[in-house]
Length: 140
Image 1 (cartoon, rainbow, N blue to C red):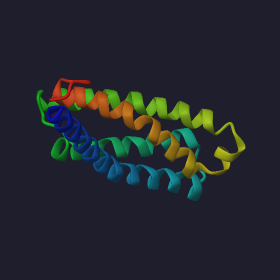
Image 2 (cartoon, one colour):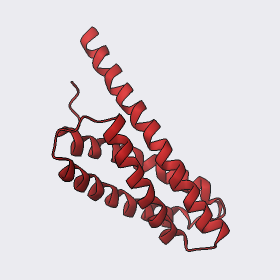
Image 3 (tube, rainbow, N blue to C red):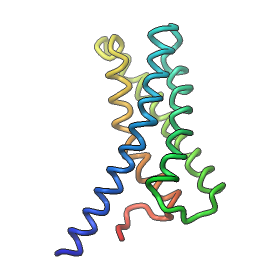
Image 4 (tube, helix red, strand yellow):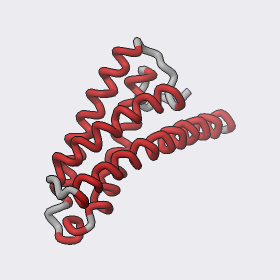
């Protein structure tokens, strides 16, 4: 029983670190997105692609430093993380486009972006864990 509790604590701590580093990158993403959409009036989906790309790069370096153990070649890990992030960015674009069809979400883009970020969080955690540590669901 204690072994299982210890494993769950480790997984929770790992997700907490991931959440904190993701929060930093997300704040950069959200700030840049809102600047582009609200201040400059740029298109929502293309603004998402730019802001999410900046967040992706920030997130990679923070996760490499503070969250995951690097079990692969750094270049391979970076390329895998970029591919995963690009998938998440495009999936996020679809989510924003879909949510923005409703008047509430169309008028409240900060809420739309936050919902999209929440959905993509788990996609990113498990796939990036695989890219860094060569494991998906397995706990130590």
